[in-house]
Length: 157
Image 1 (cartoon, helix red, strand yellow):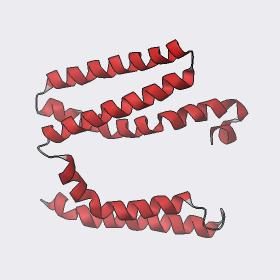
Image 2 (cartoon, rainbow, N blue to C red):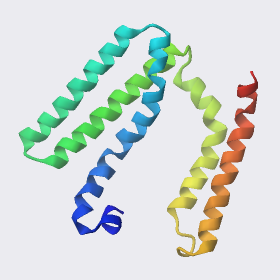
Image 3 (cartoon, rainbow, N blue to C red):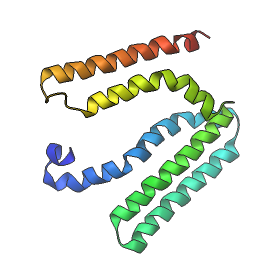
C-alpha cells in the first residue's frame, strides 16, 4: 500500500507499518483505558507501567542495535509492546472489577459477525468492482447495527 500510494521509495515504510500494526492496534485499546487507573487512584501502577514501557522500548531497540538490524529492532519492539499492552489490559480489567472471561462472554455475540466481515473484506469476491464493495459495506453496516442493538441494554443500565 505504501509503495502504491507514495512511490517505490516508501516500500520499507510499509514493511515497518506491517511489523508494528499489532502493537499500534493494542495501543488504541490501552490508551483510552489508561485513565481508569487514575480514577481508581492507582498512580503507582501507572508509574510502573510507564517505566516498563520505557525499559521495553529501549531494551528492544538495543536488541536491534546489537544485531545491527532495523527489522530485528522493530520486531522486538512490536512483540514487547504487544505483551506489555496485554498485561496492561489485564490490569485494567482488575481496576474495572472484571476479568477477560466476562468481557469475552459479553463480546462473543459480536465476534462471529466481525469474523465474517473480516473474511469478507479479505476476499475480493470476484474482483474489485462496485458489487463486492457494496457487499462489504452492507456486511459492515449489519455488524454495526447488530452491535448497537446488542449494546443497547448496557447503555440503558
